[in-house]
Image 1 (cartoon, rainbow, N blue to C red):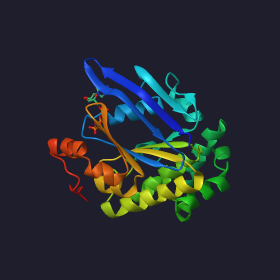
Image 2: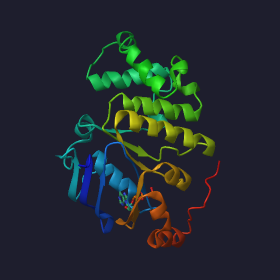
Image 3: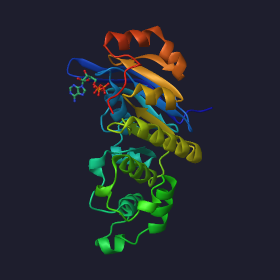
Length: 256
Ligand SMILES: Nc1ncnc2c1ncn2[C@@H]1O[C@H](COP(=O)(O)OP(=O)(O)OP(=O)(O)O)[C@@H](O)[C@H]1O
């Protein structure tokens, strides 16, 4: 099967630091791939090069055969690479439905001079998306009044408004209570299956990674040191060495 995303020989240095050093991997439609590694391993830098926020020094990032390196983030987004954004980027004073409507507006490329007109725009479609993330009943509440776990669901609906082929999720469960994390990842899985979308995510909670990733890639000091299904990665001595070496283990529990 041809990969949706193909990354080859990706490199990025900051001054003398080789933040990402020859990283390559593939990601297929319908797959959830976790990118893990100790602090400073190069996860964010890799992520930002896929999304176009950082330009690679060398290497290739292809989506459906189309080269992304050198394109602007907005063009990459238009080609089908979505990203979930943190709570600060939703409009807390707008309602849940209005937040999704704003995303639909921007997807359609429409500019409205007055919010009054925008308020009616694609409300039905926004409600459908909210239905998919279990938030339709809260459509008319301001986002600022929601529980944190519910805001994360709205962020997913906002990302879905652009119908991404590939969704980048940076620490999707950060700040969530352990019992809420599984729910958000199960919801993400359902969207992946229903839409044939691919997800690339970074995550510090190893419980989330091992429970929800189809495959895992592991970075250490900018290089890819292991790749495979969760159990194989967990048992890989190189991965164990990197995590034990940094004082972190897979058994570590995140604070509630
Ligand atoms: N803008 C920058 N300028 C200079 N050095 C940077 C910059 N961004 C990242 N680095 C360095 O590149 C290396 C990789 O950083 P990166 O943030 O990609 O790692 P990470 O795996 O995401 O770490 P963390 O888990 O702590 O977020 C680190 O040594 C970091 O200090």
